[in-house]
Amino acid sequence: MYKKLIVGALVLTLFTAGMQGCARRAPEKKPAPPKIPEKISRGAGKEPVLRVYEVQTHTVKEMKLEDYVAGVVAGEMENDWPVEALAAQAILARTYVLEFITDKGGSKYGDADISTDFEEAQAWNPDNINDRIKKAVEMTRGEVVTYKGKYIKAWFHSHAGGMTATAKEGLNFKEAEPPYIKVTKSPDEDAGPEGRRTWSASFSKDEISSVIRAEFGLETGPIDSVSVEERGPSGRATKLKIGDAVVSAPELRIALGSMEMRSTLLTSFKVEGDKVLMAGKGFGHGVGLSQWGANVMAKQKTKPEDIIRHYFKDVDIVKLWK
Image 1: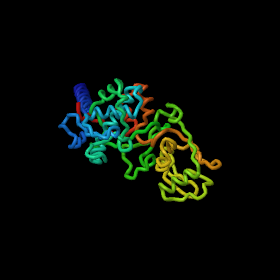
Image 2 (image 1 turned 90 degrees about the vertical axis):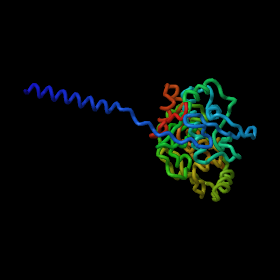
Image 3 (image 1 turned 120 degrees about the horizontal axis):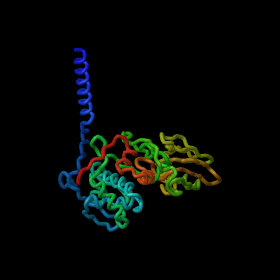
Image 4 (image 1 turned 30 degrees about the vertical axis):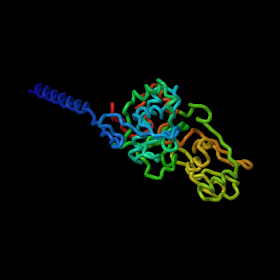
């Protein structure tokens, strides 16, 4: 009798363990796909068609969304980069245009859905499309990034300087911080050329005073000293004191020129003679995906979807068409 009880208990334990194993193996629920804006939709599971305003020719052209994405990837990344990096950029480019149309309804140019004006949307250079870019777009065809069923704001930048930023510190984003944006280490600190990895810039005191007066309506007075008043979670400057004026660092960067003041991840900020000198790390606002970080991860054979997940928190990657 005692042996029968032991055998029965053993069978029950194995059965329970088996049932738990089955529960663990149950497939996860697929994330809900976001809606494709009705004005560009060609039906469920079908590739949308865009009306794109070409600033180069001042005309509106119809093109398949994937053709538009290929032109964006060719405009935003070097076409000899690893395919996995180009593919990660393709996923974000695709997400960007769909979020743009969902949010804004269309381009500021006439009846177009989006334009090739990089100040409105994304860079676009179809002349740089090659087989590598075609492969990157095709291997991620229809893939977009979502958070709780909605397209994310698909931010990216050239070089994070080793650490990405929150939207508020990197962009002076006025809305609530998106939950999918995070401060994370980026494997680009030692990657890329000078000017991307590190940079320096020199501005005359008169130039900075004039820009601050024009853009912020503030007077600096004599610029005898400058300092970083506040930094964000990634270490980027969020407020700068220049003479008597305190200004937003991200907004000053745009006002001075993002090719000169290349980031707000400042390592030096000082006055010398009649000049204000800056030095820093990285290139761009620092929010979302670092292109040079993606380059490094791609060389390590990281999948494009996993590159995206490294830079964006708790997101889903959903395939909307085949």
